Image (tube, rainbow, N blue to C red; front, side):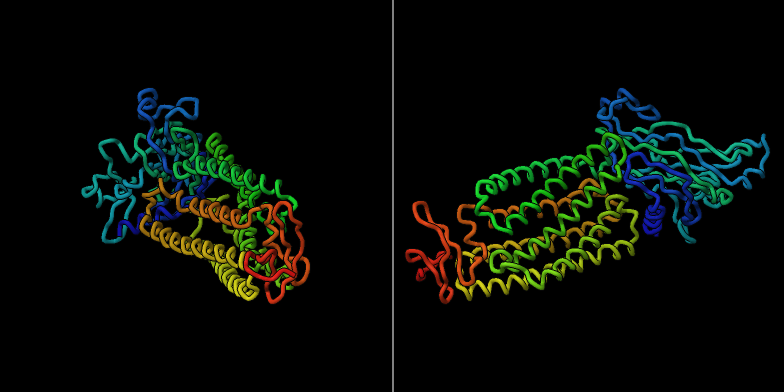
Length: 508
């Protein structure tokens, strides 16, 4: 009962949250949760301040050093103001003293059981006369149990006399232990249920503003940028060196590599800027998301046309090209809707229904891609086997085996990711959450490297290209001999006892 009620409270109000380390509030409303009114002011993973920072800046209410990378981890209340309706304030006179209370409570997720109290009638957050003996709480205030170290932290914000606005103290709460921290604003007075909150809070880690869940992304995307740069350099060198031998499929691979390099570097600089400023610029993040969506779509289309044998078995796609384009357009629309909401907003903002609505179309389209790819591969392999095209057949068998391995790895990872999410409803494993998303980038890089290796430009790479002459293959001769087209009879062709595909045959 207790865990379920608290989980519901944790999820309520998420639609107002932000991924920025500077959490702004603009006349935000409170939500009814059990017997209280709660506004969720933020949730972030924070690492503990270093020992040196604690000794220098203190443990409570002291501002951090000017530099970002100063070892200080803290949450600052800045310019917070709470407004109540004038009709409520007018009930009091100019000398009535404290006439309303809003409480800010900051707690670590492992201390969630210290907030509120379970009763036979339901979970309670506000103290009543009957609960005072049981919980030692103060009537009409938030129920919480304070530990020896002073946590959870509770800050009282009072309305005075007939004022319509109440201000909080500007103070910084130092984070001494690593954890996932929640900030709630709680009202126990029904008269204040229409109150609003404005201002901001600043959440800072020891090395900057980047939230703890995202800290590993900076290094990860930095490494991935270098990895794609290395892949692009190797591929580009082969591409230029064997320019005469390059065919259409290799042009497509070059485009995917370029997009991947741009995407990884944009994500890297997005997180660097986030860490330095505390905000995620929508333009930069949106640009990175759109690059990723375009890369995902083109990568899938690339795998599909490779499976169809485009440029190797087929000289052109023909009527099926319209279907491929339609599938690509549909996929980029679906994946853009999902990724924009996921990254430009906060994934926690999505309800379960919204997740299904956005994720399901992408999953269905991925299934269509996989089914179409393996169906096409089956036809291509059969066609190559009929033609007795040994080299191409061997190439496509290796490609098929690699793709099958990638699919099985994806299925296994999806199962693990579902297990990870189901068994971590309170995000206790928040420090490892980044791995579930970044795995897909690693897999994409690995598979792209495999494709680059299989279809790499070389002095005889056109041996895999479809011949422009019907029934012929282009044969690259070794040094000292002439290259040219050879005609195939019954699927056989050869040069000095070897066919164009590396098998025994008769040269015409």
